[in-house]
Image (cartoon, rainbow, N blue to C red; front, side, top):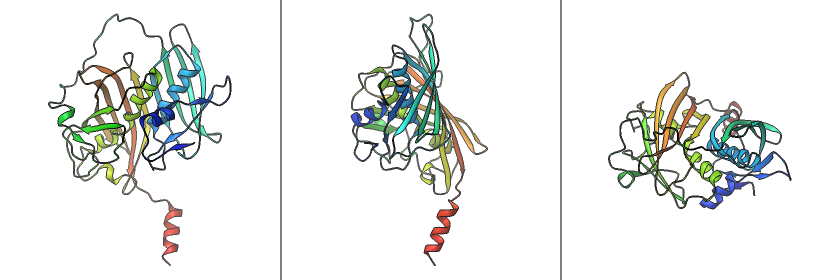
Length: 296
């Protein structure tokens, strides 16, 4: 199987993340894709898979941060190759570069930092931004599109975050609850990473009237270019997760967003950033010519 489509379960998604060695003792791993009927592989999926590959290549450590750069697209119908190149493996910290490709062609890279967590010297783990949403997940609106059967997704105070008519400050709060939490630490980190790529472009567009992600690939071209995730604690949760998104810049054909992942009681367990492309949509010339020819 090279692709998970249709009504996938959480176990199907975890199988996607759980990349397998290409052969015994190899530092190359093979993965499949979760596409939900779209001809695209999400950068957050690739980053999660790269994290699992690095965890397997450098065992007995946990991923502390991961940064993915998605320079080319991957085809969800074909196997994906993850080649782990360790940079250094010390007593506490280890690092690796993961090259992501298909058919010998590189599509993306990920830089992974791993460590063995130590006891606190100092600690603060509550948000510095102004307070938690007033009403919480029970009062938030169910996401308007792309329902996923194994998770509950709700947006605080916004009925349709994809609509060009939805205007407000470039901040969005998403509440997310999965059917279950994976037993394995590396899969929990991959699952937490998976949603970091979904809402940042919508957050940037929200501040501008007349534009929304419903127009993506029709009148405006968008793509996730980089994702960075940092994990702050041994990753575990119960119930709801809150993904706080804030876009601090948009311009020059790009947008930047940052965010935190919090437990329902307000403890920060991860932070993330995203660079995205937002540019005028330019139809493929060959596709346009073929369409014109078909009308003759």
